[in-house]
Image (tube, rainbow, N blue to C red; front, side, top):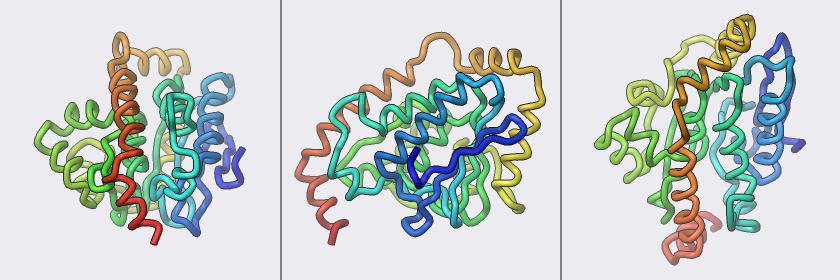
Length: 244
């Protein structure tokens, strides 16, 4: 486990908490590996009934730690980032998210794979892939138009601007905006799920997903282009600006 991912279970609820507050929980490769391992273990554990993903220090996650990412960029589906997304997508337990502060890049797109998510009023979302010379990831090019409509998805993905919690609720990225402690709210909802018949809950999740999984195919298509874009002049110029 990474020192920056805290995993603890209580009352059937496994919390995966990003704990790198000094960097607004920017995700390193080791953090992706730890979070993926926790999600896989949750799916195999008889005691775990639900999962909550949260962040420490007032932020969910500011996305990839770009410097760490550039040291070992993804080259294929074995990359820690892709393995984390697959573990999240395939987790048989309900996965909930509590969002506060920044949810940038994968901090937003991972929410598309959670069964439920809530945010506080101060949360700020952003998918800045095109401004960075990249393309969307995590299946967002398929999931976001399906829940928000093509025009709204295009606006969010093309421009890559910040948007607030109310906008995230309107387009279906989160369930609702919470005025109280959003982490406490998500944990309470997770405990309520943990008290339900587990097989019925798991089968309902499977039915909601439907036959096959076109989203994973979209994730693979995106990843192939994303990897190519990492060598593009547009991305290298953007990364150089960020490093200054």
